[in-house]
Image (cartoon, rainbow, N blue to C red; front, side, top):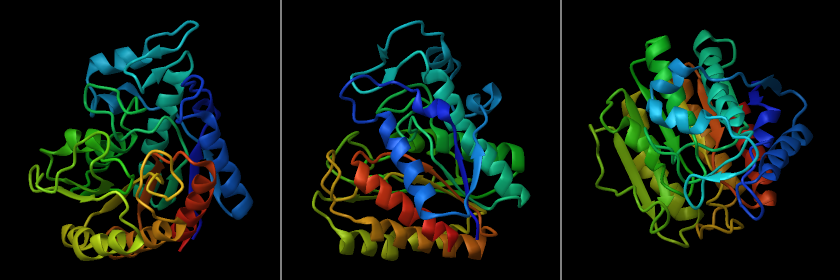
Length: 305
């Protein structure tokens, strides 16, 4: 099966300043690795997200803060999250990629997609940009699937090493969206307790530093994948962060590329069973370039089936 790749050169222009780990070469590395590994991907330019699409998830105040014109300097929204003159366009394209992917999947035009975009999104809450994230791209996609396409059950799978506090914040009272996360704990942002349930739609699986492949796979096999199967989602959305890889400088989870490929293949099976094969993923974290290249290739290979 062909996989559609959404990306845009504007995402490379988002400038986080010298020494920041969430930097443009992350995206360049992913794009180059995918082009070298596959000759049959469907490359598409990401459109901009519209204001209506963003407001389904975010407050008007956050839109104003991110989209306000920046003249000639980088502004720190918090110690980790930067806004440069080019960041607004990057954020619009990143969220827009997910919206376009949802439209293509729900129309049957392209049921598998990977959005190679930055800035990442899963830490952005309804009203706060944080954790390198400006807009919550995956949340915008889920809200669009509900509002525009009338879906009744959307699952968001998050295997980034950091808990997607923003995504949980947006949907914790929305039973049509199930959010499932495995993540290292303790670690930034300090959320994602196993006891969180929201409206019965939240499933968190905190993992200790040093947890490796066996523990990771057991957690998904025994707890999270069965929960997805029971939910019977009509669409699977994936926050594809690759920072649980053993090479990553910000965490200690000890996974490798095969683990991400394995989980992606399991998600594809569930999508084939319940969601007409529809799986859309978006790049989140991952800060070692070699690991990013290997993991993105393994992930897309599994999406191709």
